[in-house]
Image (cartoon, rainbow over all chains, first blue to last red; front, side, top):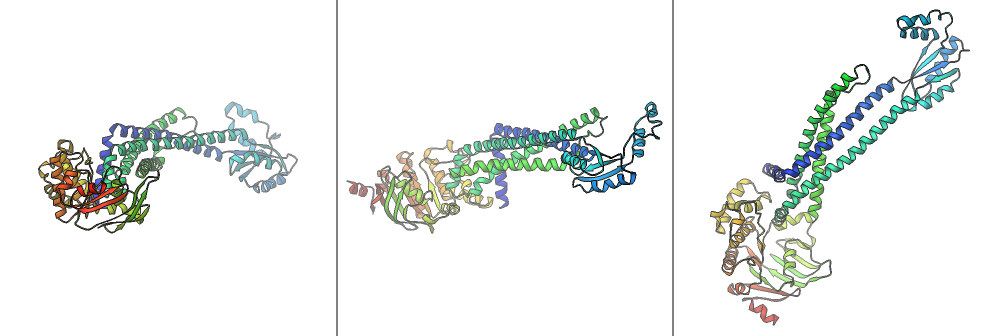
Length: 299
Length: 231
């Protein structure tokens, strides 16, 4: 493409945007709104996934060893536990260690509660089992129950399942919203470009009569769509940034006592968000105009 | 050169617009194509501009075979033609200069080439002094001259004028036809479709008459030849 052709296409594309100022403004507004909603849900899903990841990493199963086993036998049960597919790591905690850990957790006045228990320790030998996939907690707990020497298995299956359910719902809603909003954006851009092509139908007819190639006719409209998409993406990115930062500040201040509920800092996700917004703006803009022009060229 | 050999055209709705038309127009000729409405004149123009394909027979225009022409080559065929319409088809938002320059730009001419050529062609059609005006500020005759300038700007081998004087009074019609004759004298082939008997009779050119999808007369010497055959 020659330099003067490129500058002509851009000039015409920009002219098209200003020629239908209101429609262009509406198209940019819709792209911004769609990207903001899409972005907010995606970031919510992202943060929730991070949170769930953290919780997953700390999901543990307590496996209590049969009291009739000797210390040596109790320690050998770990070999069988580690052979299970979903077991990441298992740590043996002897009854004495368990009591001492329990004592550490009790402060001040309550520490007196364990006094005298050293000689008659009611706690059992146990394994703290960390899983590879928390989603399979129930199955793994059932398998652990069948390991010889295991007396009881304590797993917080209900909590893990609820968290996973919330994540599934958020992911599904986000995906559905992304698909719907993308379609809406493409439709709006397509209508803006349709209006532009309709307004310039005579000009296009003349272009075809004097021997303009389809490529030459198409480019100004594609650039118009591209610029609309790009403007919408950039505006949405800065709005998302400010919205996210403000929300993140509030969450950090409001939930400062709950250490694991922290939103990822925007700096960490900035390149990804910018890239996705630009890509979506580019695809929606170009896609919308190409869709219309293609149909228009057939007529 | 334009050549039609045993051309038939049947539209999708079953209308048989052309029934075995053969016609040859050599380089540098001036030809009037006359005939009543629905006779097949427009179909011939559409065939020559690559808008439609023949159902049977062969159509050759400036080295392009229309029947086998690929869609992506149609613009290149059209660059060898200059088409003028009855309703001028100018872009109202552009000035006279821009309307003409626009036709050069869309075929990839550089700004320098445009600056050199447009004033020359506007001078040829006598509109240099109105280059900055908009089409609605011009008379019908002047608008048609802008359309002729636009048709000429890419130096076509053939000018196809579809009822170029249909919207003009007799004096302006004569002016436009004289301009086309001058262009023809410079070496461009001209095919003018018209209904205007007086005008055709005034110029002693080749007249091809078509009726019912067939060529019924092809002679030099005015419209009366066609009427004589019809009657």
